[in-house]
Length: 363
Image 1 (cartoon, rainbow, N blue to C red):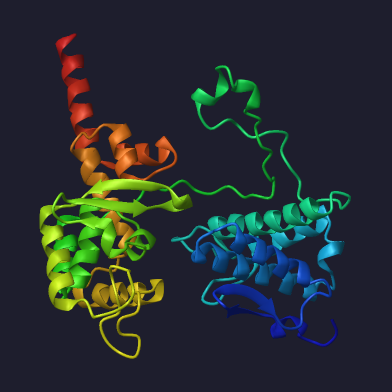
Image 2: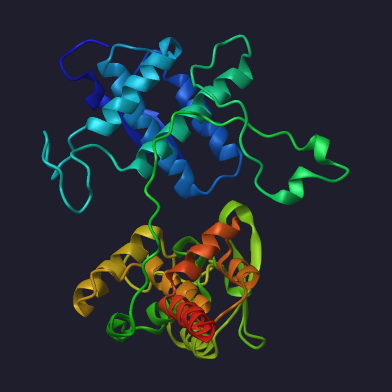
């Protein structure tokens, strides 16, 4: 760990579908890679494994610059890393006391990014403590986390529901309502697509509420065109069934018969051209598709998740029951679905007008 810039030699590499740290790092870098292997063995999604690897890359590079090993990390060191994340000047970001109006932050990573990094670090030290309980875990914990639902607070098995402690290494995240597309933006974006594959992908997000990863995870057998149902594998490998819009079903059927390359892959959406023709469409490939069409359509907000948000907002404005909204969106927590109720302007205006009418009638 000598030299002027020792951390630059440390990088993330991918081998055999797994993500690892490689290069000049702390002397005990092996424990980080053992943890990444453990994450892979637990069946996390490839995107989560990759995120953990890059979050721990940032942490271990900081350790090298601080002349610390993983085993020498203390709570004080973690708090200093938290401060570093909050104050780091990033490329294209103003430093000093200049506060951009858009972000409201003078410098540093976004709160969500910091909390994700801290979650990866907490997982690393939990793993280390699990292997050797004699080692001190430097991650500060709260006494107990709040139970997630009222159903868990009582009943015959209530004594088995032990609240889990949470890390205190978190920063407050601003709660922003999801932003969908208006009709003009939606029409412009959808009108820019030129293939049935891309139209079908956008349709599954806009009319079935699928996430990008859920669309890419679809197999041909998951789509029942005749009955118009989709089998979706969501976050945490949780399965749900979602209705399939009749027009989107037609796009999927046309794509399967006319566009989809011959391939041994069972994935529904494949690369259509180039050296990777016939292979499953990747997250990077999907981002490239949307990046291009956002520019062509002149819709800067035309991200895949914006289409999903438009679906949730449309359901809320139609007065769909909250439980149904939660099931269709695949939300673990009902408050994630409730955000769409607050977002829907038609729903809010109708409730407001009804309340004002009652006030007038009472006069």
